[in-house]
Image (cartoon, rainbow, N blue to C red; front, side, top):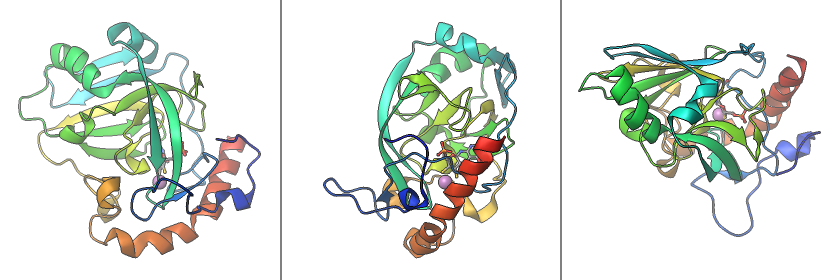
Length: 237
Ligand SMILES: Nc1nc2c(c(=O)[nH]1)N[C@H]1C(S)=C(S)[C@@H](COP(=O)(O)O)O[C@H]1N2
Ligand SMILES: [Mo]
């Protein structure tokens, strides 16, 4: 993975040589800043960042992000990252705490979720959020990451904490994570039909109504400009 400066030609996803990517995905050699709205500025991150667990719980609890490694053992994980717009970056190494361990060892005893919780909403400090089924969130590769490639998570890639779910399209991997809200049934999406409830990369679940294959080209064509704009916004804010 190369670092900045990034040229527009670096932002055109290419077919990789060697091992295949998931259906419809192509490879980028850089990990760009990206967003559905590339002009949305980076959110200010409070010095004492917190993560609140709320919703269908007996007790709503707010944790200091810096305190998480004292509550759950930290671990690192290497995985490919797949954006719904068809670009993928291989072998990103994240570090943090496994969501499943955070759930079992912290959320269950301290927050006491209702028995029938089936879904969560993860929300970032910029107001962007994603709906995730609890069984998808509890997959063994889902991480609350505060490090990427051996360094503290940068502002552009989601400081201070990021929900990382490699088996789902990137729009579920919420940056600047500040709130996890628990729901008994499928929580509402703020993105409407564009957000697939599961968004599993292996099944090309890009959109809740339109087949993933039909969106490959429309999405792919928008990648270089969207990424270049998102990078520029990231440098300015
Ligand atoms: N808080 C927040 N998280 C977010 C987004 C966002 O705009 N805000 N964009 C999503 C999308 S669409 C993608 S592809 C990835 C991009 O992550 P990156 O900027 O680290 O490449 O973050 C996801 N998580
Ligand atoms: Mo994305």
